[in-house]
Amino acid sequence: MLTINTERLLRLLDNLAEIGATAAGGVSRPALSEADMKARAWLKEQAEFYGLNYREDSAGNLSVILPAEDANAKTLLVGSHLDTVPNGGRYDGALGVLAAFEALLTLKEAYRKLPYHLECISFTDEEGTLVGLLGSSALCGTLTAEDLTAPRGGRERLLAGLKRANLTEEGLLNAHRDPATLAAFLELHIEQGTRLEEANIDIGVVTSIVGIRSYWIEYLGDAAHAGTTPMDKRADAFWGAAAFTQQARDMVMERFYPGVINIGAVELAPGAFNIVPARARLALEFRHGSETELNAMWAELQSLARDIAQVYNLSVQITHSGSIPAAPLNDGVIAAIEHAADTLGLSHTRLMSFAGHDTQNLSRITPAAMLFVPSVGGISHNPREYTRARDVVNGANVVLHTLLKLAQA
Image (cartoon, rainbow, N blue to C red; front, top):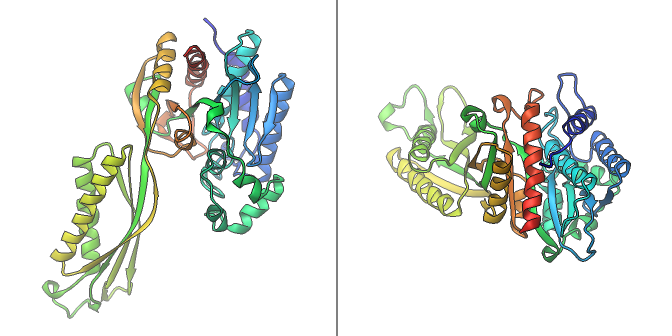
């Protein structure tokens, strides 16, 4: 049975981890930083050393290519990202790129000619240091000029990064690929959670990537003297906010498993020990892998917010702050991953991804899916992020055999 070169893959991971290495044992390679530029140059050197084709598009996405015999063949994309969060770990993103790279090398050395071009791709700024999912949004044609006007990492930082990488805003907005040229997309990633480790399962087959919805919930009451105003006569905005937080948690856990909810910020005004709060503002975010379930969650949350306002003699204002649609993944690619795991004798289970990934963008233009390998302790975005060597190798071999299965299809 064809398998990847274990020693080479682990060595490549070690070598890449030296670029942007931190004293705590992690890696810091924010998108388009000096460390990221060194990692990009390193990937190009590896491609050239091993005799693979190399290309960079106008969004800074990096591609290593094993061409098909037919120049007009479609392309099977496989990869992830090289950038990290500040002081992050060595596996998030990097594993997906290097497992794809190793799969291409294995097929090249085995003289396997597939009916598709194989393209190992590293997307620019998956982590959103500058603009979230920047490179994959550009490739898919969903990036807008507005996204670049007020990026979450700051306009000056974006422009400095683009200059460092010799990229332009015009290039970003014109980097889209024709979906008709693509056959499918596959991404390997560490789980960044504990489900696989706790169940002692080798491979997680991702069926959907959660949608995310964000709102500000603002309760309005009356400021009052905290000592002289009787408890039963108060319109305490924080009481409403606290009741909403607890009841929303219970409701989501009971009715919308495995959906999740978070209150990430609370603002109170006037904000003093001796004043009953007149205003309480909550940053609400909730996630689920189905748009239908997201709609149902939001209907229930709105109703709950308004019911609580009545109970506590408050008014409530709700403001939309952003949404990312749920991304159901492709049944055919999912089946190919499962077939590959079975071929290799690896246990597997279907699960949902609660973190965002480039796959959610690619799924809108081509058949796409992703697989997870276990993360020890579920730790990620942290120097202690760790995936065992056997799981690294298992994931890379599943990538290899998924590509072979997709090529047969």
